Image 1: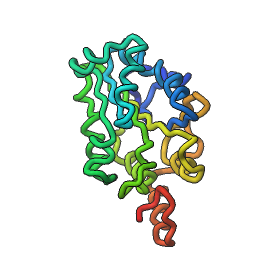
Image 2 (image 1 turned 45 degrees about the horizontal axis):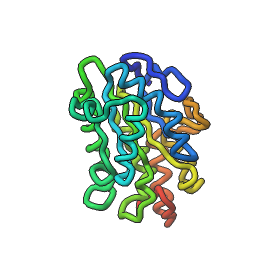
Image 3 (image 1 turned 180 degrees about the vertical axis):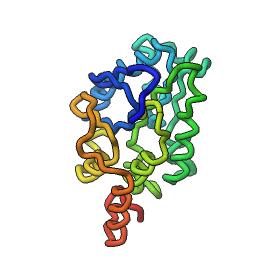
Length: 218
């Protein structure tokens, strides 16, 4: 993994290299408790915050940030905070296209979007995959392909999952696609991670066998 511009404190660990992590939580309260220090530190350091949220919760997400002393209106005006919804990202035109989303995400988290000498702290809610929309079953393949597409040196990308909503088999597959994992509120190197090429081959084999569980392209 590659060295980032400076150490970053995330979920009880000091992160000193590029990070694509899946973060598993049992509730929104737990999610905010674990990730808010990472978010606040970013604002204190002058970093950019890029968040993708459920459109129904955008207002409440901003309220959470404001309760932590973050002037969200000023931050959005200055370009330090960007909050996008699923409809603007994962579910454009009402469906999920993994290749389009990878291209979209790479543009949104590009280093040039952050202030000079600063980084972008990127958090994305993945509950859009629970929607009854075309293409959402591609989520595992998307996560695997994202690993291939991310630059060698990239700023932190944290994909959040609610364990109370996702099936256990999907959770296991999701875990295998991320080099790092946050579980129990702690960030750690993921011992279950497998190379993207191997994961994609496995998904293709499932598809050929007629296995259409979530995470397999239909």
